[in-house]
Length: 342
Image 1 (cartoon, rainbow, N blue to C red):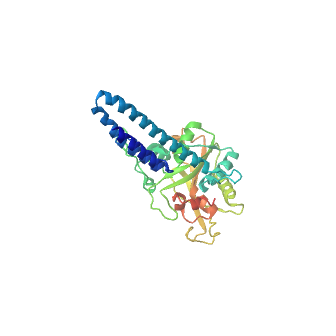
Image 2: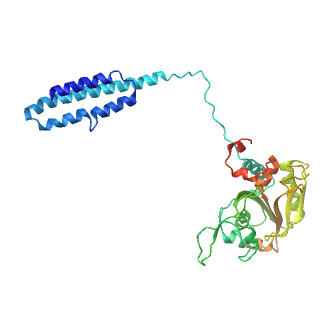
Image 3: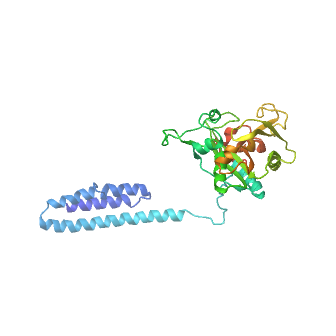
């Protein structure tokens, strides 16, 4: 066994002396010194020797194993030091350029609008995207049997209230935040409510299932329709310049009375008519009107003492007008080439 150990030592040292690859060295270390390695197998045979031979062979075996392990460690360190020294760094070269991120055009326009309204004394309010049926519908004058619920078909959460009804929805508009803000702050009140909303829509160039809205309201004594028109005009001028025209046409919304559409000149075609504006020269971007008395009551405000107006924009459509974007689906498409333009 003594001769066999010495021969194995010479064989191992001869094989590893010229190795310069860490992976190959590791494989050889496992082959000879691992739990099932050749040297380990020989050492296990010492148990069958006599007591005198165990002392003699055991001492030799430990010495050989230590010599081999030391040689492995020596070559391993040599390989590591060589790799470090070969990795020369020229500190005079310019550093790596880190790519800058880009704000979404939605964020850019939302920030512009928030700055405008804050300068006019409005507060910026926020609320939950997972909303109760009460705040999303009932508090906004849309009872359970109202046909307007079909117009705002949304995603219901599979969780029932004590009555056994599905009570939680992904909000269809940020109007729910208006009610919460009235309850929290009372009147007089000036606030805007930006945020993400959801509807079960068939998508096309003008419609998406997930999009953003920018709503606002003013509640005070003596508020009338002329105040509303003045605010809408300021928004158009802020976003699209002093030549922007605003058009308001009657439309039903259950939470306002009377209610109107908000339309701005289509900047894709300059008002001449295109596919985006359906050849009309105008693009509908939202709705507005005088706040319905039932909504004021739900917000804890006396409709006999106060009046107010509310407006709501599709923020995506405002951005499409501002930057000439022809397809609303690009916002959620995840293509960096789109975002990097802004």
